[in-house]
Image (cartoon, rainbow, N blue to C red; front, side, top):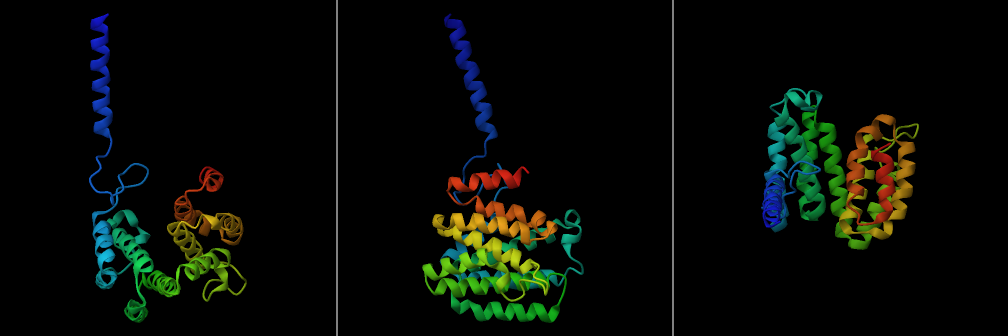
Length: 247
């Protein structure tokens, strides 16, 4: 009996060591381990830490982006697997604009406006998406500068009425990519604020958005939208996630 007990203990220790070895070891609280999603890129952690101390450091990465796109004659998104460096650059650019919208101050707006002007003058494969993200970032900075309540109301209006803004709808009322971005970023901002009182309005807007978007817009945009929706610590979003992720 004693021998069986010792054997059971040894077996448990062996299995436990294997399980523990398979789990990612926590090294940095800012680094998301590769479990459901991939691990947080080290560069993003550096960008986050720098911008926490000084948001102006983010402007350096916009300059790096301009230099990078000038070396590419065609969009890496056309053949993403053939140009992983290009895809990483686009993702980093998006993350930088996310951070600018989160922590940027009005003093940085003139630099972002100069970025927009330079990108329009070049008018290459990435200009349209660069300008859209930059414009939305400026709007977020301006709204945040008015106070948390004004920011919350603006972001809620982005979610409820994404096509009521310039360049957000076609002549026949269809959504443009600008409306899709505005809708998603509005959800993201409200989630980061912890605005759980807006969840009901967001879920109602989500159902309308699925009707307003084209099938392609919803297909390609829903994963980012649902990812941001999942940031709410509110049980009401579970059914929406289940329906839209596993439909």
